[in-house]
Image 1: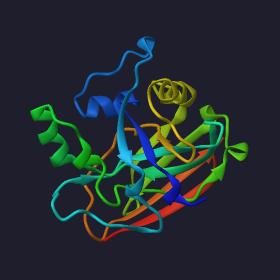
Image 2 (image 1 turned 90 degrees about the vertical axis):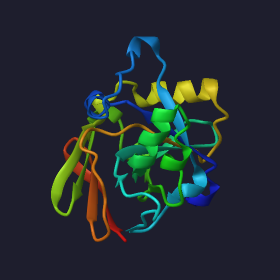
Image 3 (image 1 turned 180 degrees about the vertical axis):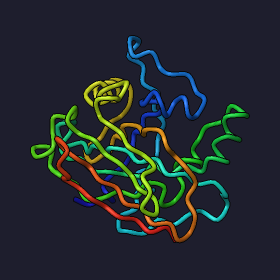
Image 4 (image 1 turned 120 degrees about the vertical axis):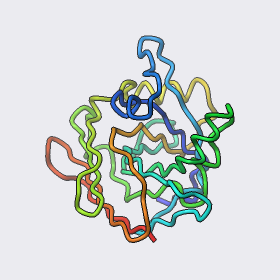
Length: 206
């Protein structure tokens, strides 16, 4: 599957309560069914094992997420793990000024992504867990069942409000434990189904 065909990355924010508290943001009311989305350009996808940090930020942070790919019928077809890299210093400044987060979220290489797995081999979502280690230290661990808005809710919301296209990607949010990256860091992420690893990926920060 060619990542260059992806037009848009629809990324949901504040979808894990503990990470939302970590960012000192308000937790969305799931009863309102209004997830908070921001857009990352499809061209910021980065395949391979290298993560390149932008030179203009001194606080680029990792956010490990379950990524879901959209098929020709606008349904989920494949699953992977991705990093929603965030220039946190730039994001904080944008927030303080009431400005969009585009520079903080959609710079070149801002979405490193692993290989894709068919959803036929990796659902239901509730049985999925994932984690990220940095330099062999566990930094993030999440369960799909802890999402405030579940994957199907996210999909239906995007379909209703945005021009969703085949090959687009939905990022489903990150658990707590985000922290800054630096050159030389080694990252390993795993996706588990019923406690069995179904995907392992590695990134080296350069």
